[in-house]
Amino acid sequence: MGLCKCPKRKVTNQFCYEHRVNVCEYCMVTNHPKCIVQSYLQWLEDSDYNPTCELCRKDLAAENCIRLTCYHVYHWSCLNHYARQLPSTTAPAGYKCPQCKTGLFPPNNLVSPVADVLREKLSSVNWARVGLGLPLLNDEVEHKPSMTSAAKSFVHTYNKSVEPADVYTSGMSVQNTRRVYQSVDIEEVPPSHHHHHHPVAPVSRDHDENKYKRRSIVEWISRWWMSTYPSRARSLHPSRQHLYRRYLTLSVLIIIGLITLILVFNQLGHLGTDGDPNFDPLSNPNIHVKNIARE
Image (cartoon, rainbow, N blue to C red; front, side, top):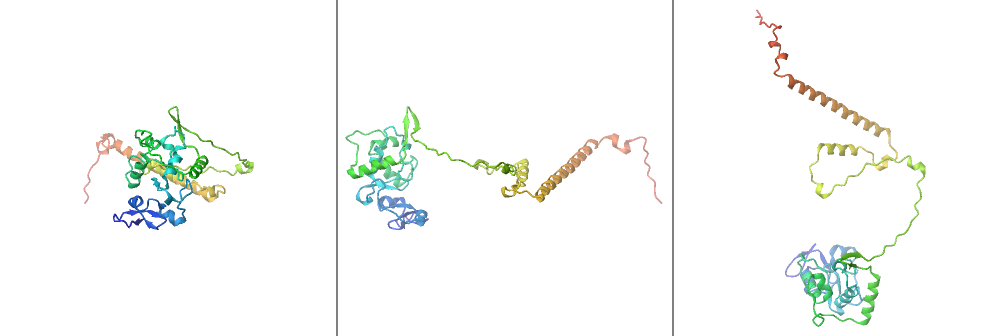
C-alpha cells in the first residue's frame, strides 16, 4: 500500500512500472493513460515490463489506448479488431482480457474512473453496446477505429492462438472448446502393500456458514475421539503404546459413564421416596420412640 502523489492523496496498491510511483485510478486516467500499471506486490516479484500492446506488439505510445478494469492496456484499434473477430453470437461473458481472461465489460455496480472511461469508449461500438445493455447504433454513427494491415494480421494470428469464447446457440450458452486427455499407465500396487493400509480419520471440512455455529456436546466428543486416531505417518507402523492409550481412554470413559448412571439413579430413588409415609420410621406404629432423660 502506498500514497498517491496526486492532489487527492489516495491510498492505493497500484504501481506504475514506468515512473515507479504509486498511482490511483484518477491518475491512471489523467496522467498515466498508456503506462503499465499493476499491483505493487507484482512489481516486487518482477519489475521487468514491456510497454507494448500485447495484441500487435507495437509501442503503446504510438496509438490511442484503452485500459480495462484489470488495468491491462491495449491499443483501442487492436482491441476493437480483436473483439470483432469473435463470432457474432458470442455472449457478453465471452469477451475477456487477452492476458488475464478477466471480463472485458465492467460490472454495472462498479464505480471508478477507469470503469467510467472504459464504458464511454466501449459505448461507441456496437459489439460492446450489447454487453453494456445499450441499444445498437447506426452504421453511420458507429465509430470504427482503423488499424494497419500488419497489426490486423498479427491480431488475427493472436485470435487463432487463444481458446474460443462462449457462444450462444439456440438461446443456450455452449462452451466451444475441445479438451484433450492423456492416458497414463499407473503401476499397480503390490498386494503386500494392501495389508499395511490403515484407514485414516476423515477430515471434516468446516464451511464458512458453520464456522461460528455453536457445537453440541456430542460433536465435541466425536471431534476429540477422532483426534486420538494416529496420523498418516503413524498409521503405517502403529505401536502398542498407542493402542494401550486408546484402551485406557475407552476404559476411563466407561467408568465415568457407570459412576454417572449410579449417581443419577440414586438421586432419582431419593426423589421417589421423599415424603412417602411408608418409609418414615416415626409414622410406623410398630416402632416406639421414647425420649430417655440422661442423668
